Length: 104
Image (tube, rainbow, N blue to C red; front, top):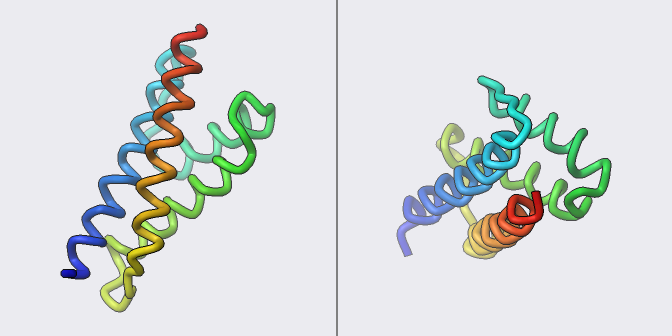
C-alpha cells in the first residue's frame, strides 16, 4: 500500500479527533487558535477530571504526534498498525463526545 495513503489517513483521523474536542468546547463556549492549546485544555479540564477516560487522553496525544510526524517529517515511516490505532482513537472519541454532548 502507498505510504502516502497512511499519512493522509493519520491526518484525517487526527482532525476527526481535533474537531470532536472542539465540539465539546462549543458547549462552554471556549476556543483556542493553537492545536496544542486545544489538547492541553481538553486534557486538563476533561481527561484529568475524568469526564473522559485517561486512556483516551494518552491516545489523543499520541495521535497528535503521529499526525505532526506524518505531515511534517519527510523521513517518517508510517506503520499500518499506527494508522489503524489513529482511526480507532478517532472513532472511540467521536462516540464518547456524542454521548457527552447528548447528556448535556
